[in-house]
Image: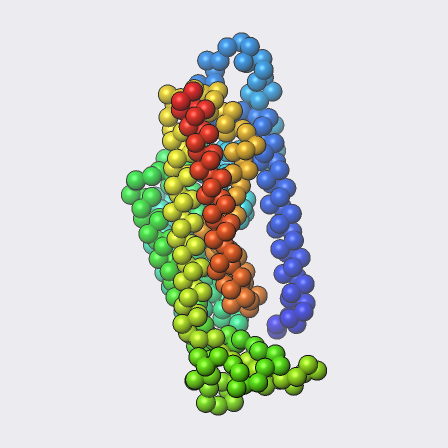
Amino acid sequence: MMWPSSQASKILTFLLFIVVVYCIYMDTFLFLRIQNYRIDIYESVENATQESSTHKSIKQQNYEDVVWVPCTINPLCHPTVKALMVDHINHYIYGPLCAILDIGLGISERMLFLTPNMISFFHVLIACLGAKLLTCQSLVARRSAIVLFQIRMFLDDLDGHVARERKHIKGERSEVGSLGYWVDGICDLLGVTAMIIGILFYLKNNPPRRGYKGTPVSTLPYHQLKEINSSEDIEKEHTDVGISYKTKVTFQRIVQVLGLFSGQMVLSSLAWNRYIDMYQDMLENCTGYDAWRREDTFRSGTFFFATSLWRIVNPHSYLHLLSLAVFCDKMWVFLKTVHYSGYVGLVITVGASEYLVESIRAFVVNG
């Protein structure tokens, strides 16, 4: 039995409020954790002078010794560059759930036949099934598709978790250039492409309508009227202010809006991976740079703010927002809202990142 739409909307709004509050709460504690406890990626800290050690005495405490949530499932234990740039849902919800599932089933330790690449290939199959359901007119079917796509994103997080556990790597990291890196990226691309194609076919078969209130049909744009042949193509609503004509959005317009949104996804993915790679090289991978300078940069509020922007505009965040829009039957409204405005946020984030990269290079690399 389906809930009434008003009741379902209230429940969904309440759940979204809880998730937003939880993510803000976790972001706050992540910042405090970075500021007040030792960061395990800087191994040369022990060689500091006595003066520096005294100054940093509070920050040298081990977070694992004071936190009550075990580090096997705690997303705050091992902060890394990538961890600061991963979207909130993956970092704070799917990440701990992957760890719990791994502990319960023993995927990393006992199920050695199940490789991370196999998990990646499997979530592509799930994405294809979800894309098929996305083309259905039934809202229940499309919502089921969104559940499948969220499972796909969970498995995308799981393959990385299993790979890190088997290599005994702590925290989120990108092994740029490795086979797993490319397999994971290609499978992500295939999964997202399947979702976009499913949405395209749905909108093609069920085009949204554009309204013209109080406007005579004779004055509407010709391209909106040339294919109108029946009452199914144009609807008239008698309102207090006159007649409202609703015409179907053209397929060309649908392709344009969806193409611009897909372009954002591509640019966001390329830039997000680029800055993860650059930050890792300057702050984590190169132990030849001064450890205190790298640590101070990593702890700075400026770095936390710049990486937090990528939590919002990275490709996974786009997918979560799109999934929410489809689930709420607001797909076209969401796509129209962000197909231009999303580029503004992306440009601002890239600009802030470029400025920060130059500042880090001047402070850490050039001394």
